[in-house]
Length: 388
Image (cartoon, rainbow, N blue to C red; front, side, top):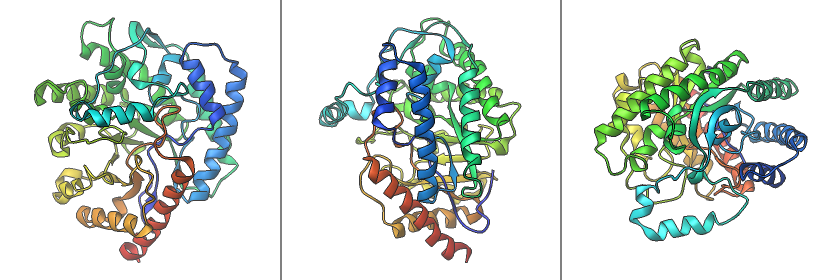
């Protein structure tokens, strides 16, 4: 994993806007209806080629495939693993329940048939096993092939894969004896995907909103310690699944839920860091642009907390259509770098993805690319001030 040696590098959290035609195919498949697989394959190829070009055009250094081939950042595993079926019932986030107007506004915004509903994901009804490696192999091969056509125009590439904890939390368990057994079964299966991504030469990004989000979702009515026990079990499972992958090839993404809402039920970073920091990852990506967590960069004033990790602070909010001014982006990068004490261990990122599930895009597509251009421009400004 590269450091920001000569300039502040930029990246994003993974998901990018899908073309409408691809969204239709994903949502149709998610609903259980039949689609033409050849048509989906072709649409994914075309969308991935386009999304790579757009990231490069926006000036992003560390890029990916935009998750074009996936219906969402975690439910896609139902097509690669055995044991899933039916429909889960996901608890509503505590902050949305506290403010009914926010909940109603969210429902109105998401009131469309062309959307993958993550609150109604499949559930575990049988043994979880990774039974079909061809999709992840094809995904890696496709990204390798397309990147070869753009050599020299980006710094590195990553590919994301979910934490076993977000799957266990959002896809109900009706098979395993308890949550820990379920988490471990998922982690054993995910090891196949983590290893495939690493073997293909990509940075492995573990998407783990569960390590923060579930405090005000699945564990909202339970003591903090019960939530932290869940976090500990997930972290142990992740580390077991990553055992054969070099630490410097892994980055961890943690967030409190990629939705516009009050977020005043979010667990503070300081309450979870002692557990989250045990993930064997060389970099950690955290939300630091949105109004609820923008202050938490100060947490790293103690140099022992970050250790030798790279910090990827979110300096772009992925839930608002405001386009951050490049000077604002630069200010955010600079204040984090000054606290960390080493600009070389800062990579500028986004708080989360821009379309974590097909059809669930809060930021309009043109604005997404304007935001990513501001990210690159702001990083260039910060680079001059911090690195000369």
